[in-house]
Image (cartoon, rainbow, N blue to C red):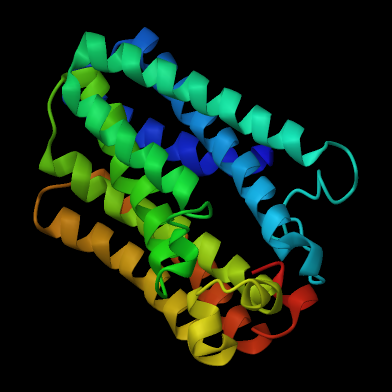
Length: 269
C-alpha cells in the first residue's frame, strides 16, 4: 500500500466528524471505528488496484514511474506475489466491511448503504466485470471523487449524529474536487500505459495539453464551492481559511500548463 495516500481517506473522515462536532456531537470511539474502517478500505483499494493493474499489464507497461503514479511496484519488484497482494486486499476489505456492518447495526442502516456504495466504487473502479475506468471517459475519476468525498464525509458524520445533513454534503464537495484533482494530474504520467490496456481516463481522451484545463477547472471549482457554501450560509465563515492555499493552487495550475508532457517537471505539481 501507499500510506501517504491515506490522507485521501483521513481528511474526509476528519471533516465529517468536525461537522458533527460543530453541531455538538462527537463520540471518539465511533470516530476511531469509522477512521479504521475507512483506512482499511483505502488500503484494500490500493492493493486491489495493484493486483488488477498487474493482471492487465498496465503497471508493466508504465515507464513514467513517479512516487505518485505507476502503482506501488510491490509485484513488479518481486516483493510480493500477485496472489498474496490479492489476498491481502480481500482481508482489508473484510476488515473494513466488518467495521461497517458493526456501525450499521449500532448507528443505522444508512451506514450500510453508504458503505456498500463506497466498497463497490473502490473495488470495481479497476476490477472486472464493471471496471469503471474502461466504461466511459471520466468514470474512474468520478468514482474516486464520490467515494472520497460525499460517501466518506457523510458516513463519518452519520456515525456521530445518526442523520444526514446538507452542511456535511456541501462540506464534502471541495474535498471531493481536490482529491479528484490529485488523482487527475497524476494520470498524466500514466497516459501511454493506461492507453495500452484500454482505460478511458480524461487525459487520454482529451490529450495532455487540453486535459490541463480540466485540472484547472477542478481546483477552481473546489475553491468556488467553499465561497458558495459560505455565501449561502451553509458552511461557517471560518471555512474561508480554506482559501489560503489559493496561491499554491495557482502555481500548480501554471506548472501543469507548462510541463503537462514532461514527467520529471510535472512531479512537483
